[in-house]
Image (cartoon, rainbow, N blue to C red; front, side):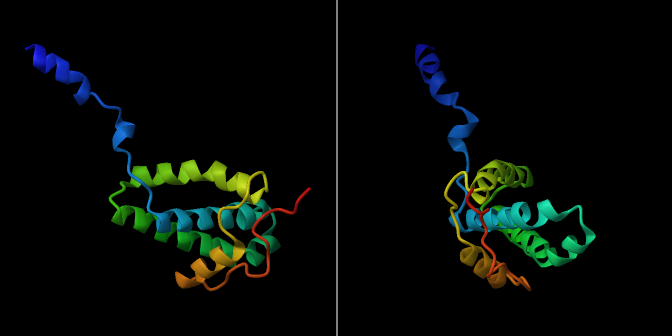
Length: 133
């Protein structure tokens, strides 16, 4: 009986101990999708003219997000776990595109990734981070 009780703490492990690791390719795709969304799409939702101008970036963001979710699913992530990955990345990507932190990926990286996944347009000539203040 004592041996069983002594082993009990080994059986009680936090759920985080078995947390899945996000594959690098899925992380990059999700990061770029969110960067496109945060930088190119969200600030321009109030203007019909701007919505049309930035539609290629909205399409690229959606395409990349779909690919990121598919990569996570292939790695064994549930829909809820994929949503958690996305939610966890939003503040990080926001800080990076607003130049509060160094950006993890460049505009060139994300544009190439979007095109590799079939996006019609990418922001090759636009900086993916806000201008320095």
